[in-house]
Image 1 (cartoon, rainbow, N blue to C red):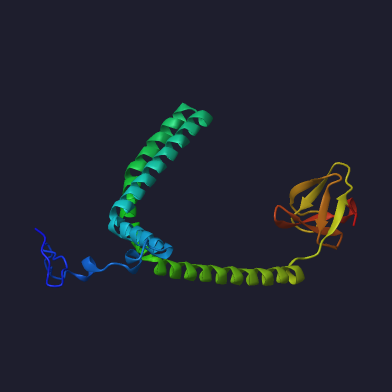
Image 2 (image 1 turned 45 degrees about the vertical axis):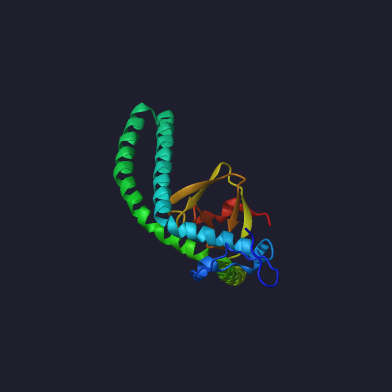
Amino acid sequence: MAEFDQYGRLKNNNYRTQPLSSFGSTYTPYSSLYGRPNLWSRLNNFIENIGEWLRDNTEALSNNIAIGGFFLACAIAIIGAIVVWIDEGFWSFVGYSIIGYLVMYYGGLIVTGIMMYVLRIPIFILGLIFYNAYVLLIAIAISLGVLFYNVNDWTFKSTDHRAVNTTTNIPTTTRYKCTANTILNVRKEPNSSSQIIGTIQSNAIVDVYDISDGFARIKYKNQDAYISKKYIIKIY
């Protein structure tokens, strides 16, 4: 039966005074008291959940990634064995399969076991980066700053390097045409008795660095070589 106090207000007999609990259980965010959480609060909660999940599942994630990498390597090895069978025949396939099995069984298992522990470090660090939105933004800002600095540094070095090359390190050449009837011998040294290391076809175009004592210095297979001046003509 309802009861009223001396001022005619309805008494609430079901009300009981409750003791205060911990701060975390009684705290209500400002946004929850006055409506839905704002966008920043939802983003921050989402990032915190990701970070907490990464930190709680570091071991399981590292194990799964390492095992997944092992099976991927096995799949690649199987495809390689099939290619060997098609290209080189059955017995090459057998030899490849035996060696591949031994390598994957012993080496693969050892590497997988090591990776299960090594991968825990970057996964846990990633979980710390996703600790909340503020930490994540700071990490992104630092990464962009380092990247921007390195790109600029590389650009300046590259510019200087190009300038040095174009002004001092690249020797000038003049193009000549081979006028020999068939082929022209390429010699190791600038004399007619030197070792022949190759030939140039008639009408071939060559870059000559300089001419001295009747022989022109050229590049042949990335090394200095010489051809007779008598059988070349300057084209420009």
